[in-house]
Image (tube, rainbow, N blue to C red; front, side, top):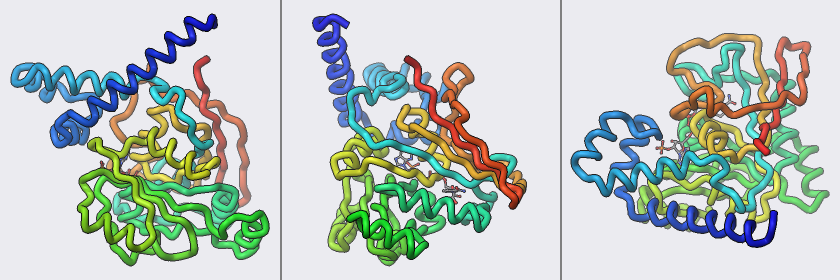
Amino acid sequence: MPRAGANSVQFLIIVLFTIKRAISETTDAETLRKAHKKTPRLSASVVQNKRKSCPVQFLICKSQEILSWLPHYNWGMKRPYVFINVAMTADGKIDTISRRGAAISSPRDRERVDTLRADSDAVMVGGQTLLNEDPKLTVKSEVLRAERVARGLSPNPMKVCVITSATLPVHSKFLYEGSARVVIFTTNRTSKDKLEALRAGGVEVFVHSGYRVDLAQALGTLNELGVKRLMVEGGATLNFELLRLGLVDEVQAYIAPMIFGGESAPTLAAGAGLERSAAVPLKLTDVEKWEDGGVVLKYSIERSA
Ligand SMILES: NC(=O)c1ccc[n+]([C@@H]2O[C@H](COP(=O)([O-])OP(=O)(O)OC[C@H]3O[C@@H](n4cnc5c(N)ncnc54)[C@H](OP(=O)(O)O)[C@@H]3O)[C@@H](O)[C@H]2O)c1
C-alpha cells in the first residue's frame, strides 16, 4: 500500500480507538450493563426507549455497539498468542446445569491439560468459573514444574482472572495455592476495600473504566507483562467474548464420551451468540481418537485476508 494510504488507515484506526475509549468512559455504565446483560446487541425495547427518551444517549450506545462489533477492532494492539482449551461432552456442554465444575476430563486429558499449562506463560479464567470452581490453575506434575524452573521460569504460569466485580474470597485457592504471579482484570464495580485487600496480598490488579473488562486492553497489558502464550480455560462467556472480538488464535477441545443435556448447562461459547454470517470460521488442524473414548480436536481460527 502506498505510504499516504497506509498513514490514512493508521489515522482512521487511531480515531476509532479514541472514539471508542471516549464513549466507554462517558456512557452511563449501568444502562449499558443492563442492556448488555440482555444481549450485547441492544434489545428492541431498549432501542425504542432510548430513541424516544434520550436520542443522544441512544446514539452513544449504538456507536459503542457498532465499534465493538467491528471485526478486528483490536488492530495494531500487540497481544499474546491466545488459545482456548475446553473439556466438553458430546453435546457440547462444558458443565452440568448445576454449574459446579463437573469432571469431564479423563486422566489422560488431565495430563494433556497439565502439559498445556506448563507450556504457557499465563492461564486465564472468567470470573464465574473462579467463583463457581475456585481453580488452583497450577501445574500438577512435579516433573513439568521442575522443567519450567530449569528453563528459568516460575514453577507455575501466571494466573489471570477477568471479573467485573471481584467478590472472590480472600483465601481462595486461585489466589494463594501454588507459587505464581496473580493478575486480576476488573472494573470499578469492585470496591476500593477489596482492591486494597487484593493488592495487599500481592495480587496485581488492573481496573478498567468500562462496564466490563476491555479484553483487548487486558491482552495488551499481559503482553507488556511478558506473556507470549496465553491459555484460556473458560468459561463460556469469556470464551465467546474473546472469539467474537477476534482475539483467539486456536481452540482445543477434549470431547468426552458422555452427554449432560440441559438448556442452561454452559457450552464452549455462550454470550449473545452470532448470526450465521458472523460465525467465527475455524480450520481443523488435528484430530486424535483416544482409547478412553474421547476425541481431541484442534482448530486454528481462520482470519480473513
Ligand atoms: N469444561 C471446561 O473446560 C470448563 C472450563 C472453565 C469453565 N467451565 C464452566 O463454565 C462455567 C462458567 O462459565 P460462565 O460463562 O458462566 O462464566 P465465565 O466465562 O467463567 O466468566 C465470565 C465472567 O467474567 C466477567 N467479565 C468481565 N468482563 C468480561 C468481558 N469483557 N467478557 C466476558 N466476561 C467478562 C463476566 O461478568 P459480568 O457478566 O457480570 O459482566 C462474567 O461473570 C462454569 O460452570 C464452569 O464450571 C468449564
